[in-house]
Amino acid sequence: MVLGSTKPIKDRLKAIGGVFNPRLTHPWTKERVPGWVFSSKREQLIIGVYQDAIRDKVINKVESHMLDNISEKSLVLTV
Image (cartoon, rainbow, N blue to C red; front, side, top):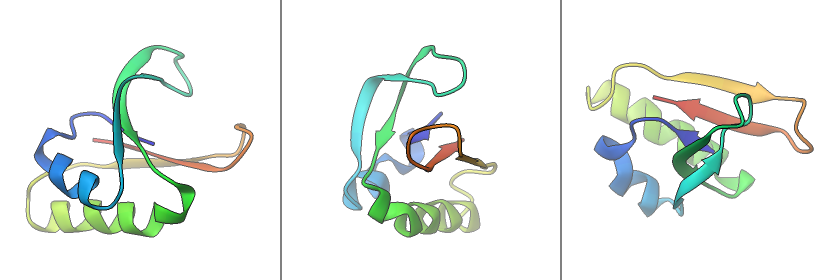
């Protein structure tokens, strides 16, 4: 799941198989938030997109969290 201000990298996220959902539930706050959903098999591609975007100065800050308290481990990235 990728949350936050993803507009600068939306084309990159879509290119690696992401599906935008304007009404996801944030795993901690339980609020409705927009974001991208991916297969867990895409984790390394997602990280690569973020690393490239930071290097290219398209985005400047990323927080990532591995969630162990959800049924399956999930990578949550927030811009």
